[in-house]
Image (cartoon, rainbow, N blue to C red; front, side, top):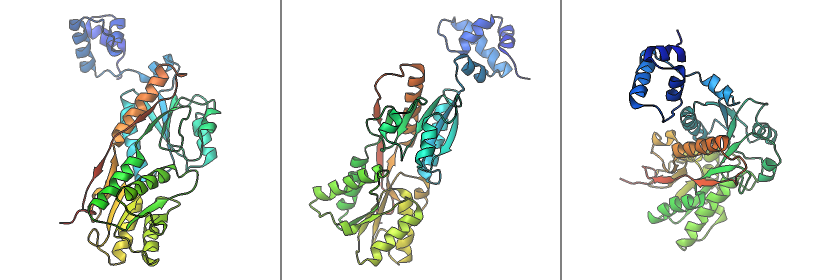
Length: 335
């Protein structure tokens, strides 16, 4: 049987209003009274009716997370952290995959359907700042690099510096012919451009030439694309001694291609990635990578969205940076 506020009030010997004050976190409740109420809540296993609470606020209690691909492990892992962070607000998270398609992203940014969601955490690939500014949609927080100076709050990491640091790690190990896998020249390839810029900065700082022959494009960032790009580098006559892959799934593909070519990692070719997905901790060898703090990204995004829902929705958009670290593992570390 599901107990009501009235049942808790009777058990604690207080009014229903007092129980409501305790449940909603009001501070002006005497400590001994609060203790009795909390004890009654525990004894009855009372759970607040979040649906009723949301309806009183004119909300659904549902937010959405929209990402390009759930097949990319980074987004799947990020989704788990968003769900956890949203639970602290009593929110349910609807997860949508846009495929980076313009029309699907437009539907998501417009609120999916009327009154279905209260807010949106959104990683766009196709829509621009101008597109988003022209939509009369739901409150949102943006993730990633596609939309700069847009109409919504945004959570980012410093891709250029992170790419520079992971490339510098390879240079410090003595590598001089460092390839890059994952370049993209499309409008949607903002992350690729920033990571390529960091890679080029590190080469320049070390007095090394930027060689286009060592830069392999990848229209998608899946394992197969990484394997194909690595095979292409090897068969072209370009022989890198290290490879910076722009995400970990590309790196996992590159590891496979190197193994099939009879090359050892890291003895013959060192490999690094970006994203710190769980697969990279169990690959052979384990993968050195840039590790964005995915849990912090999720927390920041949910907090920004909560502040918009409960505060000033017309205030200027904010941009906040989440931390990252380098995870140095076996793919660049010799015994």
